[in-house]
Image (tube, rainbow, N blue to C red; front, side):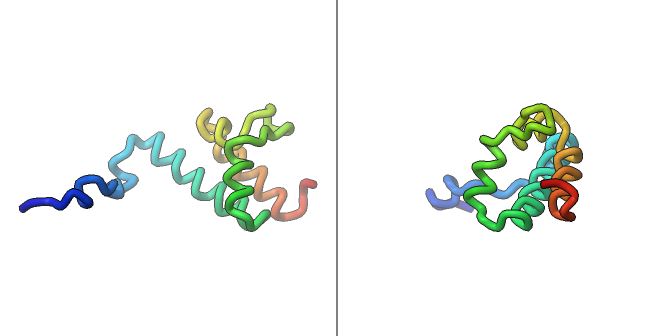
Length: 89
């Protein structure tokens, strides 16, 4: 079987099971964080900027990306859920 050039260059989706458990877990947190953030803000571009660029004072002045990379994705999810419920400003 031969593959076309486009097929060879096209990235294949990799199932989460193929990643080490810690990466798959981190990725799941990121998906949930983006979902929650979009429910709060609604603008994907602003959410992307927030995720990578905006430190959160109450969470050690780390960006959401840094929090996820450091293993604090569930803490960030809880923080966003509190905002969504109106328990934070």
